[in-house]
Image 1 (cartoon, rainbow, N blue to C red):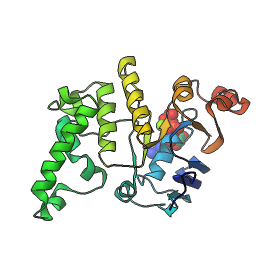
Image 2: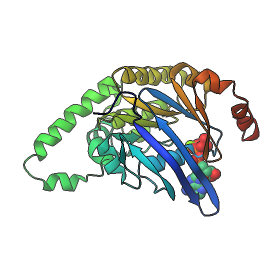
Image 3: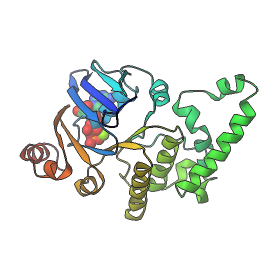
Length: 258
Ligand SMILES: Nc1ncnc2c1ncn2[C@@H]1O[C@H](COP(=O)(O)OP(=O)(O)OP(=O)(O)O)[C@@H](O)[C@H]1O
Ligand SMILES: [Mg+2]
C-alpha cells in the first residue's frame, strides 16, 4: 500500500534540449495529493515539463516516477493508463467534431486506442459505444456544456473549450491531472466556474498540477507551489512563502514581464 504522504509524482533531474536551447536543465520535484501550483516566467520550461511527464516528449535525461513506478519515456497512452493526464495550453480537441463526439472519443483518444482497434475487438463494441455516449452526456452535464453538445468544438468560446478539455481529461478516470493554463483566454465568469470544478474535483480525491500565471489564483487554490526558472526548480513552498521570496521576485523581474 502507498502511504497517504507518499508523493504521487516524482520528477528527478529531467533534461530537455531543443537544438541549442536548454528547455529543462535537470528539474526535480515531487507532487503530493491536492492542488499544486506550477509557476514561472514565460519560457521557464513548464509546458515542456508537462510534455516530458505525460509522454508527449522523451526527456533527454532524468526520470519520471508515478506512484513509485518509472514511467520515463512511456507513451502518452501508457501514462494515461497509469492515471496521469494533461490538458494543453492550446486546446487539442477536434474542431470539426461536436462536443458530444469529442467526449465520446476522449477515453480512447487519450489512451491512444483507435476506433478501428475497438471495433476490431468485436462483441463489446456496441456496449462500449453506448457507454461512451452515456458518459459523454454525463460529462457534459457535470461540466455545464450540455447546451453545446451538438456544436462543433471549433465554434466554442475559449472558456467552453477549456471546460471540454477538463471534461475529456476526467473521462479517463485519472489520479493526477496536469492543467496547462486552464484559465488562459477565459472570461471571468467561466474562470470562476472552472476554478470551482477544480476545487470540487480535488475534494473528491483528484489531484492537480496547475500551471497558472495569476499569482492570486495560485494563492487561493493551491496548497503548494513549485517555481520554475530557466529549466530548473527555483523553489517550492506554501503560496505565501513563494510570493514573498526574493529569488522568485527576481526571476519574474529578470525574465519577461508578466
Ligand atoms: N518545440 C520547441 N522547439 C524549440 N524550442 C522550444 C520548443 N518548445 C519549447 N521550446 C523552448 O523551450 C523553453 C521552455 O519553453 P516552455 O514552453 O516549456 O515554457 P513555459 O514555461 O511553458 O512558458 P509559457 O509560460 O510562455 O507557456 C523556451 O525557451 C522555449 O522557447
Ligand atoms: Mg507553457
